Length: 315
Ligand code: DGY
Image (cartoon, rainbow, N blue to C red; front, side, top):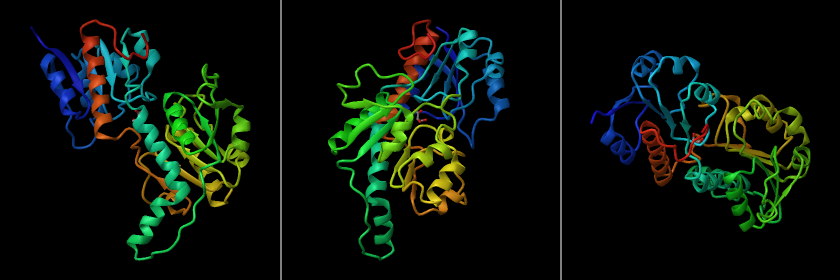
């Protein structure tokens, strides 16, 4: 039996790669650097499947360059790099990896909040510098957490926050059906901004959410507010966040995602003392990234054999 022709835009986890190799002839980009666009389009000329790692942009141009493409699988839950409508128009199913990364991403998101509130990272820096002294933080117990974008990850963050004795409010564009059972109270975006002690942003990046945290929103927050972004960098206006932190309009920010990303070492945000940034590692545990790669491989193989994708965005 001849093998499916597949393009893999970067290296993936061994288990998933083995699965692919059983049924596919794989052109894999191993660097250095990201796969050049020309090379990708050239490889796609006869490809039947695209396994996208590294958030390579998928648009009309790419789809036109791949006339035999029958499926695209991506090893992430976010897919703001994919023109899903164009995929649908061309009849190409696109699969992402929801579910498997919920707990790991919630751990990191809540970890950012906890570390910011209790200055864990600052304490470690002091100890390393030979300065054994008290660093004061703030209690999470009894405080109000506002979750913007209460989906599966937001709900898992809320569970962790409740275990710490926090009250949960949230705002979504559409109210979540079982929010009362989850112990989360639905409020308007404005009410969330003005009443939360801590705000966690977990909305997907879209035309609606781009820049939704800007000067106006930071001005409405409490001066003691902690702000965490674990979704996508461009949901936040970086200059407005810098100003809010620098002018103490809010107390602290903890980000796993930035705009630009990666954020350069000489970026003004990094000169502030009331910020903590991690390098987009929400789902980065061995177990979770392995599961994401396996699910992406399952999506790809299902699409190649004409079956429904286990987790398809546009079917
Ligand atoms: C996701 O899965 O969307 C994470 O942010 C990693 O890109």
